[in-house]
Image (tube, rainbow, N blue to C red; front, side, top):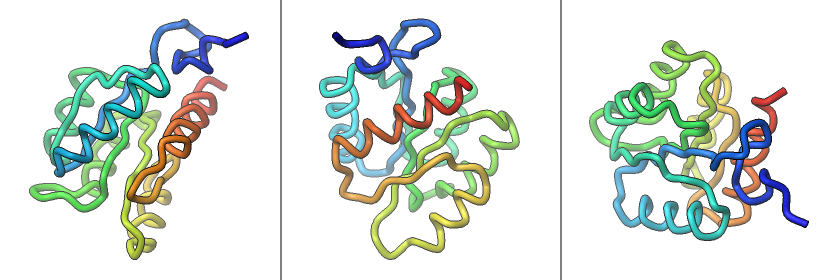
Length: 139
């Protein structure tokens, strides 16, 4: 039998887990949205193409999780993460990065990112990471 959390819903409220997808590449945002909404029943509440937009949309929508690329124009994921954690120390951010950016991932984790996934993203890893981060935040 499926539980609400296994369907992409928060255990506490039974509502869909909301996600803000942040990536400068539209094809990445589209692919992530498809994975999150069709394979896990999460709700992509908003999208952003850089860190500046991510911070604005986080403050507006207050998603359960932010899935954020590190390398973006205007403001990268590291700087956006700093702003998000400063605004909301309990924010749950999962960083996305290409292989070769391990130093930036280490920095992101030290700044408060809850997890990271490598690009190209694998659906099962994304879903497991979001579920883990949401479950940990409910304790």
